[in-house]
Image (cartoon, rainbow, N blue to C red; front, side, top):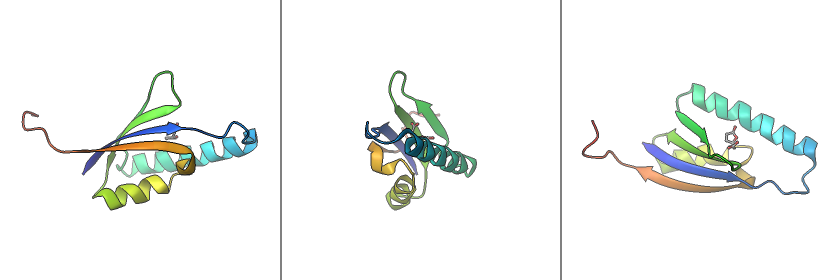
Length: 91
Ligand SMILES: O=C(O)C[C@H]1C=CC(=O)O1
């Protein structure tokens, strides 16, 4: 099942740079692992924002929640999810 997910990152302005760099490095490694597994087939930066638009390919909403909440940046992201169904005109 495909989900359209928008994630906006809001790190606390007073978070020490070393801690922020560590979270971002762990996030990158985890996101790339999920991409290699085929669970995160699209990851796009929203131009001009610390945000992304993603397509996540998982079995259901429970797996989506588990995936999103496993991200190191999860506590610092506003996340909006749109479940996708097949369009009847799509070829
Ligand atoms: O940078 C972001 O948009 C947040 C997050 C999503 C993937 C990743 O590596 O970081």
